[in-house]
Image (cartoon, rainbow, N blue to C red; front, side):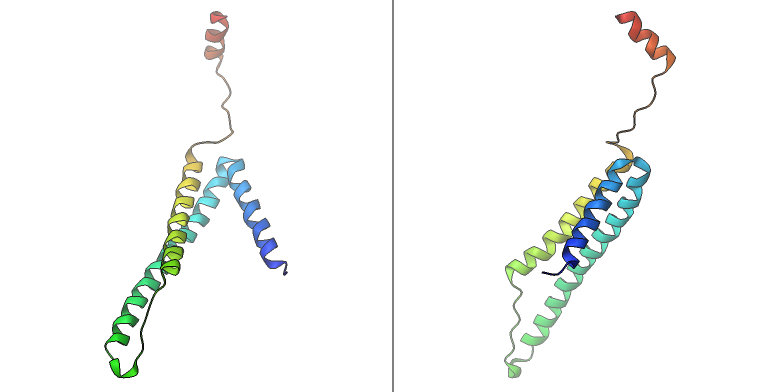
Length: 118
């Protein structure tokens, strides 16, 4: 077994945690996930269009006896990967604005109100 997939998993895991540590780091991961989702979706569109074009060309020349068939598993895999990439972008983009661990210091007036209630 090669070490390349293991290093890639570690790199991906590290970048994911890097993006969730602080809000200022999250936008970097958001941009990376945007481009990943964009190019994955673009690849799915291009592969689907090329399949349709080649199928019509092959079926238009019956003398060659060529048939084109896009398997359901391949079609589902391409579009699921595009969908999950877009969902990953949405989750990472939402991390830029919400769900951070940073807490703002309590103001003096808020402290006084809380102390009076006790």
